Image 1 (cartoon, rainbow, N blue to C red):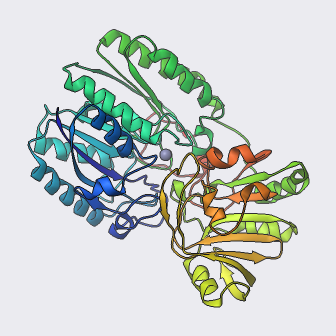
Image 2: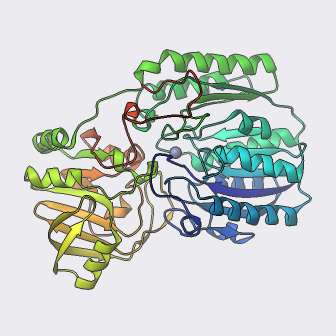
Length: 481
Ligand SMILES: [Zn+2]
C-alpha cells in the first residue's frame, strides 16, 4: 500500500480571449465543482472527471489517498498572476502537510497559461519537484487539448491523456493514470517517447467521431496491443499563442526501441493526415437558409462553434439569432446564451410576462416572452457531463417570434440535453437547434440530428479558421494553415 497525494488544478486558456480568469472563476462552481481542499475533495468529485477514475482504481489497488486540493475554471483568457499564485500557495501548503508521500497524482488540463507563466503545468511540476524531489513518481491526467511541453514530459513520470473528443473518457483517463502509476510503484522504469508536430489543428476538426482522428485513435489502440506500451495522440489547444502550442505524440514503455517505434509510427500517421483536419464552415446566413430547407427531414443542429464557452468564448453572441429572425424561422431553439441581466429581468417579470430586453452581444432588442424559469441547479445526464452537478445561476426560456432562447447566468458549453429539459424543452422535438459548442455536443445531441452544420458566426473568441489569428510566439516551423 502506498501513500498517494492527489490534486487537480485545471484551466484551458484561450490567449486570444479578452476575459481574464481570476480567483473568483476558480472558486465558483459551474459544471464542475468550485475550489475544494483536503478530504472535502472526496465529497464533490464524481462522475466523468479524471480524479474520480483515479480514486476508484487506486482505491481498488488498496492505496491510501491524500486529497490536497481540486479546482477548475471555465475556459477563458489568461489566468491572472494572483489567482495562479494563490492556488499554488494553497496547493503547496497542503502538499507539505501531506508529506511523506510515495507518489503524486495530478489532474491538470495541459493548456493553462497565466499572465506571468506561459507553460502553467510545466511551472507547477517544477515547483512540486522542488518540494518532493526527483524520485517520487508523479503521474498526470491531461485533457485531449493539452499543449504538452518538453518540460511537462521531463518533470513527470507518465502522462495519461483523454482519447475522445467529445471527452467521454475523462474518468477512464484517471483510471489509466492509476494503472501507469501502479507499474511505476512496482519498480518498472518507463521510457518516454515524445514528438511535437509542426502544425496546428482547429478544435472543430479534432473530433474523434469523424475522420481523420476516428481512424488515428483506432491506430493508437492497435499500436498498444501486445507490447506493453501506453501510447497517445494529443491534438492540443490551438487557441494559445505560446511556444509549445500544438499536437504531440507520446508513448511510455519499458522497451526503449519498441516505445520509440510506436511514437514514430503515430507521428508519421499524423503527418500524413495533416491536410485532412479540415471541413466545411458555414456563415450564419448560409446555415439558416440550409436548415430551413432540410428541417423537414428532421432535426438540424447548428454548432455555433466560435462562441463556444468550452473554448474560452463568452457564450453571448447573437449573429445566428439575428439571422433566424431575419429569415423568419418558424421553429428554432438556441442555447445556452449567457446573459445574467436578461435572466434577472425574466425572473423579476415572471412566467407569461413580456419584457423589453437587449439580449446578448451585439444586443438584439425586442419584447421577449418569458416561457419558463429555472434556478440553474440540475445534474448532467449525457455521456460528457454525466453526473455533473450544474450550477448555472438563474435561467430563463425566452421567446422572440419563432425562436426560443435558453438563457443562463453563467456561461457553460451546451453539451447536455438536461440544460434544455431544465426549462421544459425536449431537444429531440426541435427542428432547428443552435448549440454554443464545437464538438462536445455530439455525444448527447449527435444521435438526435439528421444533419449537423458547423457555423463560423462572427463575434466569438473560439476562432475556427486559425489563419484569421495573429500568432507571434509559436515555435519556428509550426504552421497555422
Ligand atoms: Zn478538451
